[in-house]
Length: 376
Image (cartoon, rainbow, N blue to C red; front, side, top):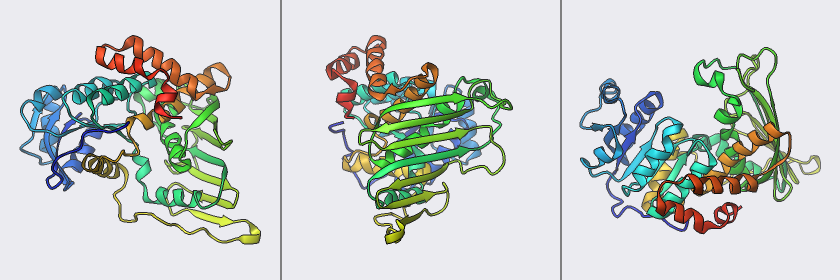
């Protein structure tokens, strides 16, 4: 995105409306109330009683409650929206906010499909407002350390993630056709992009379930992504592997021309050079005092609104993480290698066909190529 509107006054907290008062909504409410650089002024939920209970339980008062962003925005002088609704509501809620002139920080995924994500990217362009997703795992300090280690071992040839846990969620995840790929894998896929500073060009994926799985769909998968320079990223994981479980961030290994770096998903990473030059590359440029997880996402969002510097989760970039998921699912369904560009171009066609706003549709049509416009 070439640019977005910044806030004229950087000396006062950003006035925020939150949308969504459910389980994750309460987590965000606690963060917004505690954060010194934001001021919660409105809360939106279709269930206003739920919203009021959430505020009462957290001891929050002075917040306007309503059933739509438009209604609440008419009563408060808001400057931004935090979208913590269920994924299916991300597109309509975010679009509504953007066209009210309000930048948006959205929970992941930015939208349920790549086509809807492209629609949101075009809406952000049309309105000139920032749209960012909270890929919260990018903000672990130990991951930031690992990123520096990965960048210190020369040309990376192989990056791998092992992810083995055994949660029993119940509910919608148990019935999804690809629960691990669709609901979870976007986190490590996005982290791989963050670590390598690049986007993949293709993927081959096999998805399946062990006989003991309690999921209706495929709870295990192996996906091999190829990047333009030949680097391979491999994700192997299962949501029904009990015993000796990995971190929820996975277990990582990067093999480069000058050495190897590893991260167990929680602690500080390890790195070493080849035997003839076995030194541990230094960690440089890490902000050890920076906020983590969703607090990190909020801090980057506020900083972007004040400086105009594009954040790492800006929608145009984040589309690629979602495209990795859709490409992996398509590969699992077809048994064939899938090009990321093919997913993006078919999504652009779908986005244009289904777009209801003429101005957003015109913007999408002007792109010509999704991959070309987003920048591969």
